[in-house]
Length: 70
Image 1 (cartoon, rainbow, N blue to C red):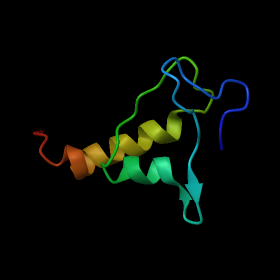
Image 2: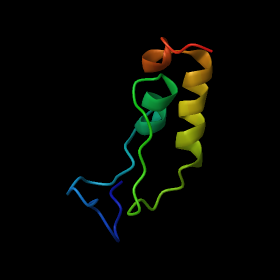
Image 3: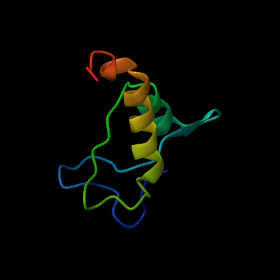
């Protein structure tokens, strides 16, 4: 789902929410530690669930967060 009012960020990248039959792909990647959050002023989506998914991966020390020390 591409943002309708401002579809591109300052670098020309598409701002969108990616979904498939299982749900929000962005949240899935974050919750598995396979992505990290990065927000821009152009973003219109609520970041709450993205931040929560990333924090959960950090707490579980999975994906890119697996090497973090406590």
